[in-house]
Image (spheres, one colour):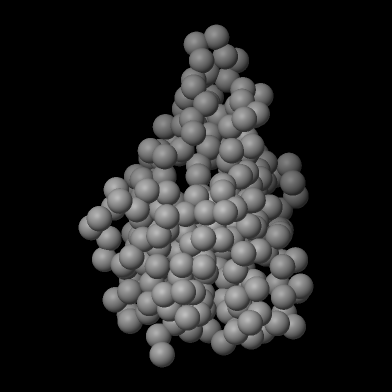
Length: 267
């Protein structure tokens, strides 16, 4: 019997690539979108779900279980980018980002755990980011929200272990997707003390995404995890230097690592 998989944010980018790959491998795949009608060309079904709305999450999970009788894998992929000087990002935008990147996945997990306990099995894969392993200039909120999800996963794993439910993180680096277009960008203000450095960093970030890897690499990594008996706690998928940057953070003195980032971002 093919596993039943739910992917939040499955209408575009990494989520869509994962969904198409798994669908072609014979899995029963459901994606989610806030507006499924806008994506009629999807090769797998899309269900309405807004990760900032608990009722919407619960309704989507009930719908999947009603149609397929079970839910084996949940991929918490829905996320949002955000850039800007920390001093200038409006508080409401900070809260909105955490609602999507942290509280949304937490509420999806809370909603699916009763069904997985009933089955005495399940796998939850949280898509985080290599940016979540370090505080990056002008991406501090994004780094913080994704880093928090990494730690939440570590705690959740231990709490649900006795129910035979597994959980893991997959942290992508830069991939060629439409995430840059969907980011909240704090405006580059003419009178801002950050105008020059933020403007330059923004161009650099967009170049990294444009030159990023094919999202199919993420799909292949997720496929391997689903077929792994005991998944690791953390996975990283990206260019060698992006993954190596995490290793360097572990071994280098803080100020030397900070200097490397300042040089990288030309600050």
